[in-house]
Amino acid sequence: MGSAIAGARGATLKKYLARPELSVLVILVVMLVMAATLQDNFFQSRSIVRNINAFAPLILLTMGQAVVIISGGIDLSTGSALSLLTCVLTSVMKHDNGVTGVYAIAIALVVAAAIGIVNGIGIGYLRIPPVIVTFATSFIWLGAALFLRPTPGGESVPWFKWFYDVGALPHAPGAAKWISSILPPALWLIIIGVVFWAFIRRTKAGRYFYAVGSNNDSAFESGINTARVQMYACVTNSMFLLLAALFFVGQNQSGDARMGDPLTLKAIAAAVVGGIALSGGRGSVYFAIAGALILSLVNKIIFFANIPYAYQTLVGGVIVIAAIASSQAYTLYRRRGASRLKGR
Image 1 (tube, one colour):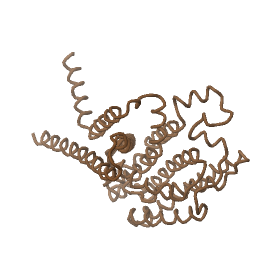
Image 2 (tube, one colour):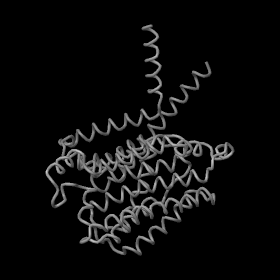
Image 3 (cartoon, one colour):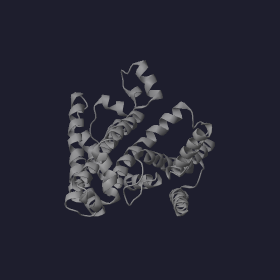
Image 4 (spheres, one colour):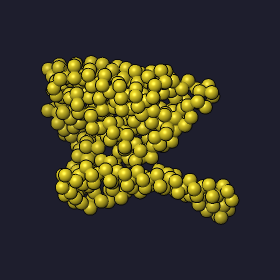
């Protein structure tokens, strides 16, 4: 009996060690150790809150991008869509009228859904390559954002600061400030995103994301409405963009048509670092969060290592490539090992 239990435990351990995501966790632990070594107060509460606030936007964008990639697409309009949502929010809100904050969220929700539907129609129904569709729509979202907000600015109701820092509110009670110091709003937004994906993942559409991403034609022949599934994936991505937009407006109290530009490729890179296969159908959105953390820690390590500014981009690129290469190498190693066992 004991040997059977030990054998079962050994098999379970081997199963987890064979998962390609293990390399992502190893890289994340190494990056955390390096960051903690270079920054003395890395694990102090204030530093943790600052890091959560700094990392949250990329985490949310990476989760959304991961969903699209898993379903067999890719979204190059992420940054422009995010910028548009911040401009929509700050164009509707009036600082002296708190109710307009509710209106702004409702309208931004509709705009976010429309963004996902337009991208989804192009990818799923018109069968245009995702790179071309989203590259084209990125200019549409950018143009709309510039129309609403030619220069950074706009208005935001005071309570919208909750999405960034409850303690920043003028009449926030002491308990709220204490809770915010432990569980900042940015973390709550990430938790909302995780719960949202956990719900979607257990639905039929969530299972179809992987099927369509693995083989679109086979999924279609199996009776799956692949076009609708890809549109659902794009709309899901837009909901993560909305969460990130709420955070940015709460933080800056303004909108900016160009603020999302550098985040598009970062979100794609973070998803790949987190083990999401660009070919689609493989990977975990939860481990994409780890990829976003790794990419965010790269900048922190470079800063505290006092690397000259002229070399920061170069060093950052090398670290990202090394992280992706090690993850892919581990996956390849495990596959070859599994092939040898099957051959026997």
